[in-house]
Length: 100
Image (cartoon, rainbow, N blue to C red; front, side, top):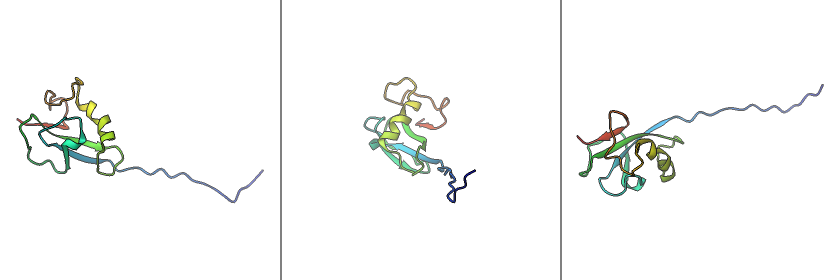
C-alpha cells in the first residue's frame, strides 16, 4: 500500500451565463457582428429594416460577442439560411426582436 503527500482536487468553475442584446444598426450584412451595437437593456430600434435586435447568451460569459461567436449564434436565428433575419418570426423565437 502506497501513500502520497500530494493530493489534487478538481474544482469545476461554472461560467455565469451572460445575456447580451445585439441591436442591428439598420444597414450592412446582418450576419456581421460589426453591424450591431451590444447593449442591455433593449433600446428603441434604429434604421428602416425589419430586424431590430437579438438577445443572445454569451458563450464564454465575458459580456462581449465576437464575430467567431456570432458565426455560431446567427444560424440559430436564420432558420432558412438566407443570411437575413427580416423574414423570421418573433413567435417562433422569443429572442428575436422585429419592428412592427
